[in-house]
Amino acid sequence: MTTRGILLFGLVALLFVGTGFVQSWNVSLTILNMGLVSAIMALGVNMQWGYAGLFNVGVMGFVALGGLGAVLVSMPPTGEAWAAGGVRVLTGLVLGAATIVAAILAWSRLGRYRGWAVAAILLAGFFVYRAVYDGGVERVEAVDPAVSGYLGGLGLPILLAWPVGGLLAAGAAWLVGKTALGLRSDYLAIATLGIAEIVIAVLKNEDWLSRGVKNVIGLPRPVPYEIDLQQSADFQERAAGLGVDVVTASSLAVKLSYAGLFTVVLLILLWLAQAALASPWGRMMRAIRDNEVAAEAMGKDVTARHLQVFVLGSAVCGLAGAMMTTLDGQLTPSSYQPLRYTFLIWVMVIVGGSGNNFGAVLGGFLVWWLWVQVEPLGGGLMDLITAGMADGTWLKAHLQEAAAHMRLLTMGVILLLVLRFSPRGLIPER
Image 1 (spheres, rainbow, N blue to C red):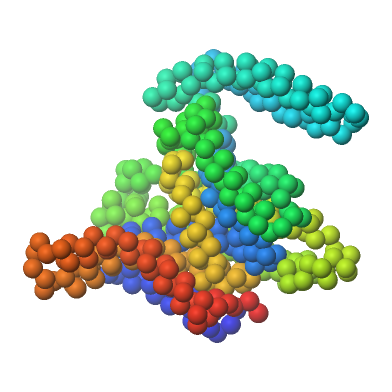
Image 2 (image 1 turned 135 degrees about the horizontal axis):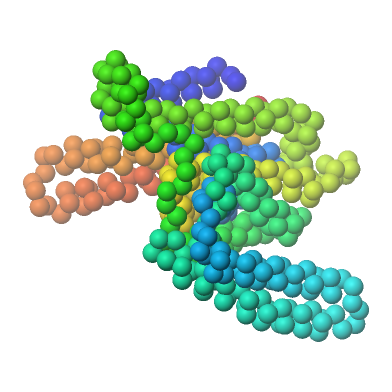
C-alpha cells in the first residue's frame, strides 16, 4: 500500500477515535463494527466490478441471502412445525424442482412435439406441486404464529452460518450468471436487480421459511451476552479495576469481541483478494476487463471467467450479510433497502478506488462513518445556522426539517467531488 493509502487510513482511524472521545466509545465501536461489515461488502463488489467490470445492482439480494443462511443454520428447529407439515413442504419443493428438471430434459431430448410436452409437464407439475406445498405451508404457519410459525433452523453454532450464507449467495449468483453472463452488460444489471427484489419478496411472504415480516429474533451469538458478563464476579472485578461501571464495560467488551471477529474475517479476505489479484488469474481478469475481444482471441473463456468472479464476489457479499444478521441478532426482511445495501456499497467502491482492494476497504469505513454521523452533525449545523432566526418563521422550520436529508446530500456531494478531483478513487488501482 502506498504512503497516500496509509495516510488516508490514518485519517479514517482518527475519525473513529475522535468519535470515541467526543461522543462515546460505545457509539464509535458500533459504527466500527458495521464499517467492518460494509468493508467486506465493498470488497465483494470490487471483485466483480474492479476485477472484471461486472455491474451488479442486486447486492441487496445477496446480502439478504446471507442473513437467511444465519437463520437456517443457527436457529433451533421448531419441532411442532416439522411434525405438522415440514416434510410436506420439503416434498412440495422437491416436486417443484423435479418439474423444472423434467421440462428441461423434455425440451432437450424430444423432437417435433417438445413444446406441447414441456407445457403439459409444467402444467401438471404446477398443480401437483401446489397441492402438496400449500397444505404443508398452511400447517406450518398455523403453529403458534405469534412466536414461531416457521420451521426454524439446524441449531448449529452461528459461526458455521457465515460460510453457509456465502454459499447461498454464490448459488443464486451462479443461476443468475448462467442466464445473463455472455449477453450485453445491461442484461446482468437487470437480472441482478430482479433477483434481489425476488429474494426480498420471498423473505417477506414465505413465513414458513423465516417468519416473513414478523422477523426472526434472538439469533445465537458467537460472543458472550452483556447480562452474563455483568453477573460474572471476575468481570465485575476487572471493570472496577479499570474504573468503568459494569454495564458500560460489558457493552464495550461485547462490541470489541465482535470487532475482533470481523477484523479477522476482513484481513483473511483482503489477503486472499490481494493474492488473487497479483496472481496470473488476476492479470487475466484485468485483461478481460480491459479488452474482452483481445482476451478471447488469446483463447480465454470470457464468459466462464466472468461467471467465476461473479460467484466469488456474491459469496463475499453473502458472508457479510450473515455477519450483519449475527451482529443485529435478528433477521428483518423489511430493512433490506436498495439505498443502503446497493447504492451505498457502490459509493464505497467508487470513492475508495475501483479495482483496488485497499481502496474498497477504505471506502467502506469512510462512507459508513459519514452515513451515520452526517445526520446528527447536519442537525447541529442547521441549529447553528438558524440560531439567530425568530421561532416560527418558515425559513427556520424548513432548514431544520431539511437536516434529515443531509445524508443523501452529503453522499451526492462526496461522490461528485471524488469523481471530479480523483476519478479513480481515493486509492486508485495501480
